[in-house]
Image (cartoon, rainbow, N blue to C red; front, side, top):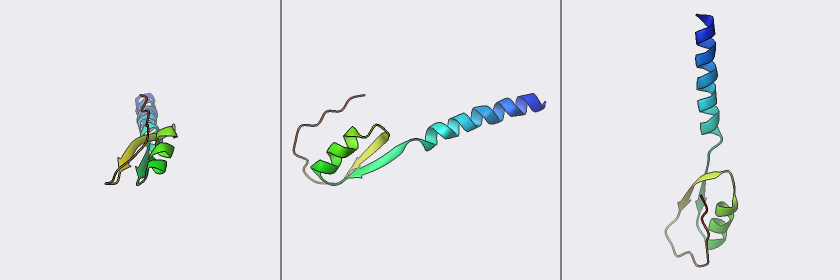
Length: 60
Protein backbone atom coordinates (compact mmCIF):
# COMPACT_ATOMS: atom_id res chain seq x y z
CA UNK A 1 0.00 0.00 0.00
CA UNK A 2 2.74 2.48 0.96
CA UNK A 3 4.66 1.61 -2.17
CA UNK A 4 1.68 2.62 -4.37
CA UNK A 5 1.33 5.89 -2.49
CA UNK A 6 5.06 6.55 -2.93
CA UNK A 7 4.84 5.98 -6.69
CA UNK A 8 1.81 8.25 -6.91
CA UNK A 9 3.57 11.04 -5.01
CA UNK A 10 6.67 10.68 -7.18
CA UNK A 11 4.61 10.85 -10.37
CA UNK A 12 2.58 13.83 -9.11
CA UNK A 13 5.71 15.75 -8.06
CA UNK A 14 7.23 15.23 -11.53
CA UNK A 15 4.11 16.73 -13.11
CA UNK A 16 4.26 19.75 -10.81
CA UNK A 17 7.98 20.22 -11.41
CA UNK A 18 7.34 20.43 -15.16
CA UNK A 19 4.69 23.10 -14.68
CA UNK A 20 6.89 25.13 -12.33
CA UNK A 21 9.68 25.44 -14.90
CA UNK A 22 7.45 27.16 -17.46
CA UNK A 23 8.03 30.89 -17.80
CA UNK A 24 5.62 33.50 -19.15
CA UNK A 25 7.03 36.74 -20.56
CA UNK A 26 5.36 39.93 -21.79
CA UNK A 27 6.82 42.06 -24.57
CA UNK A 28 5.89 45.68 -25.27
CA UNK A 29 8.61 46.56 -27.79
CA UNK A 30 10.62 44.96 -30.56
CA UNK A 31 13.67 44.69 -28.28
CA UNK A 32 11.68 42.98 -25.52
CA UNK A 33 10.22 40.55 -28.06
CA UNK A 34 13.69 39.75 -29.37
CA UNK A 35 14.91 39.06 -25.81
CA UNK A 36 11.86 36.92 -25.03
CA UNK A 37 12.33 34.83 -28.18
CA UNK A 38 15.97 34.17 -27.28
CA UNK A 39 15.12 33.03 -23.72
CA UNK A 40 15.15 29.19 -23.69
CA UNK A 41 12.94 29.06 -20.57
CA UNK A 42 10.11 31.13 -22.06
CA UNK A 43 7.13 28.93 -22.86
CA UNK A 44 4.56 31.72 -23.34
CA UNK A 45 5.18 35.19 -24.76
CA UNK A 46 2.35 37.70 -24.45
CA UNK A 47 2.47 40.70 -26.77
CA UNK A 48 1.14 44.12 -25.86
CA UNK A 49 -0.77 45.86 -28.65
CA UNK A 50 1.48 47.71 -31.00
CA UNK A 51 3.72 47.39 -34.04
CA UNK A 52 6.77 45.16 -33.83
CA UNK A 53 9.29 45.88 -36.54
CA UNK A 54 12.17 43.61 -37.39
CA UNK A 55 12.99 40.08 -38.44
CA UNK A 56 11.95 37.54 -35.82
CA UNK A 57 12.70 33.84 -35.93
CA UNK A 58 10.50 31.48 -33.95
CA UNK A 59 11.86 27.96 -33.63
CA UNK A 60 9.95 25.12 -32.02
